[in-house]
Image 1: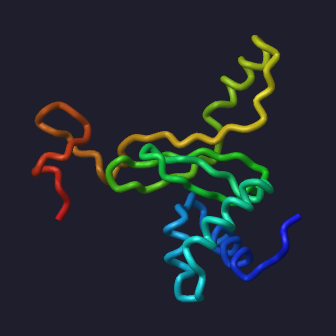
Image 2: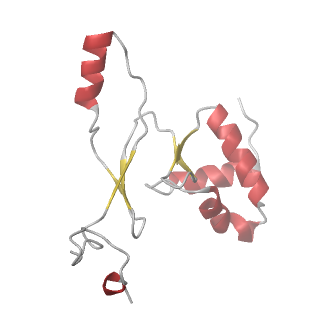
Length: 141
């Protein structure tokens, strides 16, 4: 069991107040004015991960994302353009998990998945035929 410290309390409060995963830098930016250092945020998140207080995932660039472990796993959609995160209210892997259990006797006890794509706000048909592109005509002003 972890000792309760000011930084641990503040980090936990930040994670409790959000519904989307946060990076250490995002947590730090919310706590910087309270005298919390970035290294303290990293140490706290590492300790929380070891104690299963938070769930750590990585985005497509390998950046660590943290959510509070509420004993109910969840999945997110993330836009590759604007990085908006949308929490799914169901498990898209429920059927696959059941099949793994039935076929291999393998019981899945945790899944932590981010599904990447393009959100409806960013979806613009490109003349090249791709759904999303970085061409000048698709830049938002």
